[in-house]
Image (cartoon, rainbow, N blue to C red):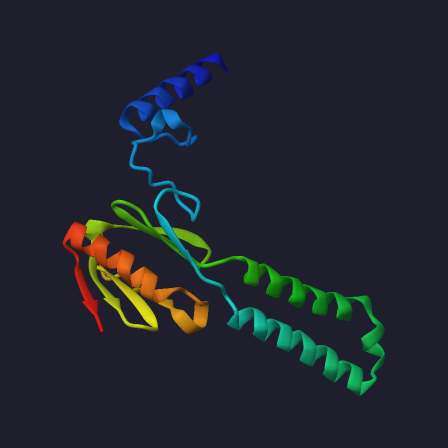
Length: 177
């Protein structure tokens, strides 16, 4: 077993030298400050999810209302009330999980489908800003990043100003409509 430990240690030293550290400690950091999430370096613009949580609360209310109005025997079961409570808990969890756009020196970060995503300045084809929406188009043909003022309560004018300076710095096409 000792030889296995030596192999692991040797491989870890190789990864540290390359700048790729699977443990995530500071020995393997490349110094870009590209820590994922909304708590890293750079300007962070946070929104708020409201549509899906409201829909879930409405669905739980309708479920309870229809069942109580029907007066069936299943209303008193624990599973019925547990379902309603779980809908409400899911709505609260989605409401508290804020969508964000973090603008770092050379990168843009956001959370899409519950995963942190990163775009380097060279990977961005175009940034389009309107009063109600910001669209970031990647070069690789991936999904556009769209941030809505009304749907997710983002401060799109402030985001547009900061993205305009980001685009000028990195020579990315910026369209203001």
